[in-house]
Amino acid sequence: MAAPAFVRFRDVQPNARGVQVGIFALANGLAADGLLSEEDRRGWRASNDWYNAAYIEPGAVDPAIFDREANPGAVCWFKGSATHLLERVDGYLDLLDRYGVAWERVETDAPGRIVYEDDVQVVAVSLAVEATH
Image (cartoon, rainbow, N blue to C red):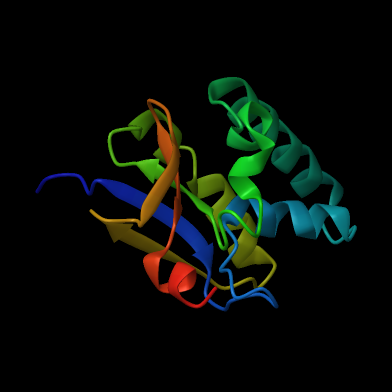
């Protein structure tokens, strides 16, 4: 079976802005709220450090990528070919499961209007979200 073109792990419910935030934001929220055990905090920190070193943060390249007016609801998608990044996602998923945070895996060949792309990811604006703005 061929790998999907794009993969995203996200909250099952939209936030107040109508965006289903990704698993990194969900895990970072647990840490920011002080909810993680010391062991989980160390694991979360190590995982974030690894991902920060492994790929580019699109907002650091161009802060306008996540501008709510220009790109409403812009979200990141892993490329299906970025297996070295996808293989390490399980640590985040396990963390979210332990703390009762629901998540879902979504695969698509058409994530929307792509506003950023590199070798491992895209940032895209859902055409459905864009139509409501």
